[in-house]
Length: 198
Image 1 (cartoon, rainbow, N blue to C red):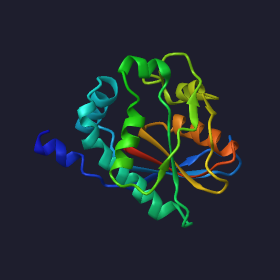
Image 2: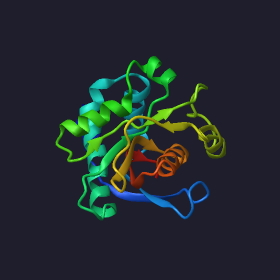
Image 3: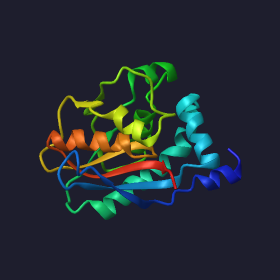
Image 4: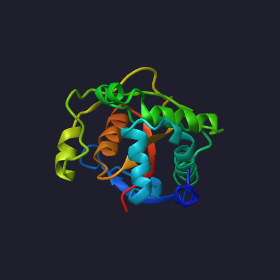
């Protein structure tokens, strides 16, 4: 990787916005932490990783996700319990096309890098239709409505949960995933991503 591109991937974690899921779960606003701006070369690298299968970018992208998680731990977790990371699942058709689950791969890299958090794959994407990449914000919200279900062993009651994903743009996917987790009894304290729209 060239030096200018590597410099663009230097994490600068910050609270991007609060995700308002109040219409899905009463009075809930969840902070979203991103480390990079989703534009220019960063956008190209994330798309190359996600859509073109450039797995070699994993070690370059994982530090930004880890920085977002650590920032969420400092600013959003008010307990000494070890948080659980819950990756947003990849749609099965997308995983088949890509040949891998890009968020799961990032999650594994974060865990290997020494994160104190546990990872649990408790969300399942139930959609069978094509992706939402080219949809408007309003259409994305409709597209992800009831897109997820919970599965497997859930974190203990009260355990802080950080939802993780690669990118947040409109927030529709993160919003729906957060609502699904909260309605299943989980304590979602933050969403952490590599990048977000400025």
